[in-house]
Length: 368
View 1 (cartoon, rainbow, N blue to C red):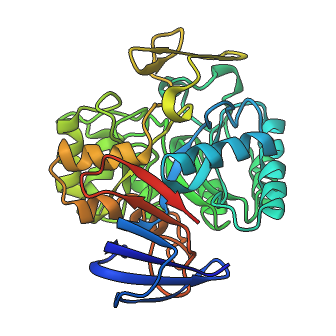
View 2: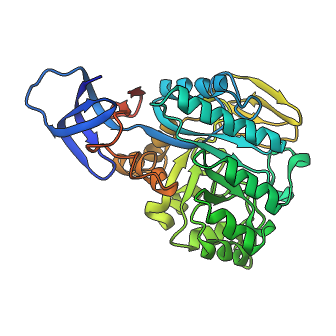
View 3: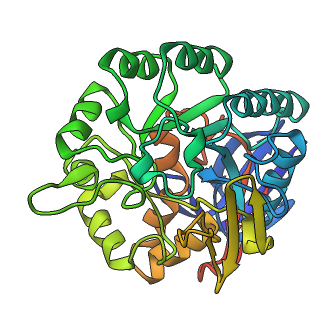
């Protein structure tokens, strides 16, 4: 279907253009040009490529790990679109290995059923995580990597698993090379790696951490840990859960100043909008208390914010320019997971799935 959009400001992913007409057909952008009073189907103060969240656990009702089904994926996509988030990687956390393959099958089936979906793949967070940094992940399902399980995940997850979170100190060099060479983006998280172990993994070709500061070896002056290694390595992308709870805004501000264009935003939302007040799935449980999800051990277990909320916090809490904050949820995450040639820009040939918003960042909506 052909659509035309006039916007006072167009955040292309690399620039901001004023008073532009975006013409789209068949789900793709055809042209971006100066607006000369033409009739349009949609108008907006501001527009960007659909916001991208590469770490989200559930929609308004269902959690993907508990229920790795088409129903859960539809719930995640619909709930995200209501918040203005166009693209997601639903995240499947540490659970029985057969759950991983159910998740892979569900994403394959969903993408076949909804070919224009904004679910671009899956994020597998675990089960190869360090027990001391497991956070809310169930301990009994954690495991050390075996060649057989890794190979099966790679073979079954081809073109579906876009990102996998691991603790690299648990892996042999050969296993790291197998995983990195598979084409899946490997991210370091829930890891107790030393500074040296972390840099070794980064030198192997890993260029992403899962959520800077959270569930990783801390920075101290004698032992810089994974946090220090991520901040010190110019090639590593460092997304942050910018809700003020998972990390202090000052810590995020320091990371932004150090990492520059390698700093971007994720939600790690357990459920979109905090509509689910209590959740229990085997050993995994969560309760919403004063706007935050905690498990019975007292650990934070996923967030409540959207990436739109994170953009607002970036601008008003960290004083980041709006243009740059928008890049942190469009082009930067797309580059970090290697899909920047297909997503993250407003440019001819890219998808006509957009996020609309006002200049004050009070409201976000989606258009596709």
